[in-house]
Image (tube, rainbow, N blue to C red; front, side, top):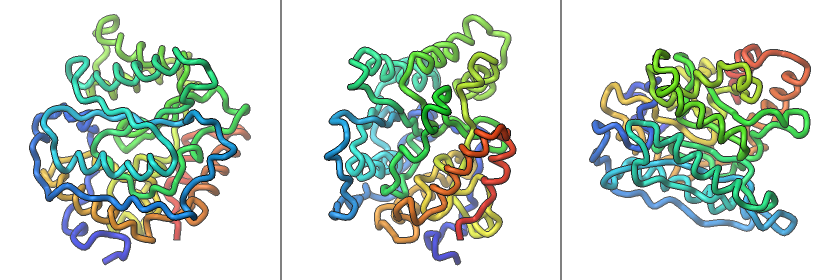
Length: 324
């Protein structure tokens, strides 16, 4: 048994998704899945972990967005609550959509556009600069990691407005970062318009496929950077995945774990097990960025892209690395 895994996780297969169905609780099969009581996450802030904001803008630069509809569902409410300490430590506003805006899974795009629009209506120096979308089936594992470690260096990569990841089936939009910009607003408008203006395009995974289709267009593709999946959209690790450096498996010290699949019906149990690890703030998972592989990998990623290497090549190399 790996010291990094909850005691029973190896008895439950770590699932990869055909598609993330957890876009705001719109999958009726996931509703009312009780898996233990509501968790109380440790919120004690020590002097060593409180960021020094004396030289920073009074306005936050990063925010988060998610959605969860219907009656409160304990496993998913616990997962959303796991982000609270991270938000408190770094000053991130957290926008949570509680009512459907559009049919199906398209409320995700509509709500992101709503938040971006609100920010663009503010004076530029008061706006959020980046937003992290996360599906409600993500557990925040390492609250010490600031989101700004992921964003592209300026001005060399000022053209990048989206940081996204692939799983083995293509784009997985369960977690991604987008810049607060007119370009991002238009991007989601384009994705929403596909059903009406290009109905011949099959959208196998609904809004996820809509995003993927837009990214394929040459006038959008240059604004998107695909990064290693485990940076912020990794799946639950198991012993074999950790040993092999599986590209989709979160590493100890990773920002979060995304529970994207429920093919075996045990997603709530997996979320509860890993939620306990997050709640207890174990030293193996809860650590500063300097004690993880993030800073070296992220710097290398942007350096290699700056030298002209393809995103695919860099991700293939970095994605399989182990951190120990």
